[in-house]
Amino acid sequence: MPRTRRFLAAGIAALSLVSLAACSRAENTDAAAANTATDKGPAEELRLGYFPNVTHAGALIGLEQGFFAKELGGTKLTPTKFNDGPTEVSAFLGGSLDAGFIGSGPAINAFAKSNGEAVRLVSGATSGGAQLVVAEGINTPQDLKGKTVVTPQLGNTQDVALKKWLSDNGLKDQVTVTNRENAQTLDAFKKGELQAAWLPEPWSSRLVLEGGAKVLLDEKTLWPDGKFPTTTLIVRTQYLKEHPATIEALLRGLGQANAFAQSNTAEAKKAVNTQLEKLTGKPLAAATIDRAFTSISLDTDPLAATYPQLAEDQVTAGIAQSAVKLDGFFDLTALNKVNKAAGKPEFSADGK
Image 1 (cartoon, one colour):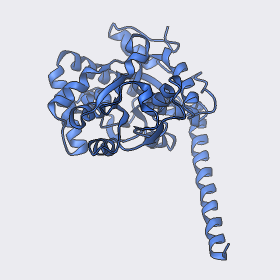
Image 2 (cartoon, rainbow, N blue to C red; image 1 turned 120 degrees about the horizontal axis):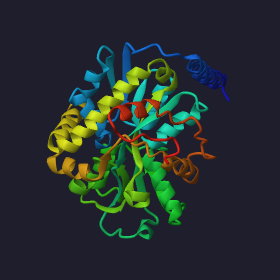
Image 3 (cartoon, rainbow, N blue to C red; image 1 turned 45 degrees about the vertical axis):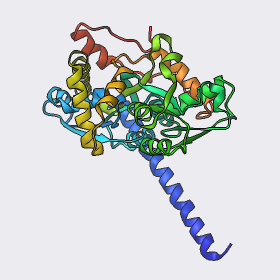
Image 4 (cartoon, rainbow, N blue to C red; image 1 turned 90 degrees about the vertical axis):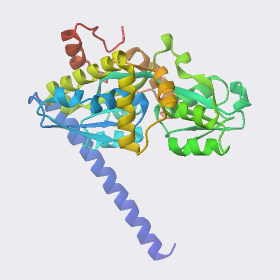
């Protein structure tokens, strides 16, 4: 190897070690701080993550209608848009995000990567809203043999669900799974370059209504009572311990957003679409958002009983070598306090 290449390789390796060490130090520092954190009252700022997806409708409604801001009072709300779970997880582990709406898979990953220290799941947000959509001519799971199926991101909630389903149907090594941004998937499907995708709303609806796809499987059919956590709410452990009142305020706002969606569905859809236009530059067609809303359920129930299975699914999907131990993953104290005050059901970490 020429000397310049040796030096370059050595330099890259050194930088990688420095980066890994810095990340490790940051996580260790956060873990130590979380262990010694005490209640400091309402926070000065809440940095909140979310996605521009209909499956994050509670977050979008809460922002657009001002429910979060009202409940937070003097706490500054700083919303931050993310397009995928792994990037949001990195923000949590790097300490640049306080709370965030995120898929169940990345939520588990954030907990696992920090050895159970960095984050806590404090509430559910959305159940449902994910479908396997396919081109004409694909009518059974076996029709996918030799074909390519797309998911939004390696290791994200839909990616794990697809790979688990393929394994259950004896198709693990007979179907190619690739990852693309949702907008790219829609374009490729329209051009006939793709024939199948497992996507969250509104993208599954867009492929059906704009790309001529059909639903081969709604993920609801794979879960008891059709309920599974598509979107959840996690919080940095240190932040939760130092500012429980702020998280309670956030949860009150989320509860109001969910109630608004139930009692004012048309206005809720409008609120979501307004946010999506702000975030992406273009609103959804009325038919798309109408269809998307039929497949989601907004509820703070964390559906805790599903998480042991979700952790096992990551192993089946090849995302993890062993199932994550979820002891300490849930902290439903704030949620139960808010629910009790509102006369609503309380939840337990075992889902019973």
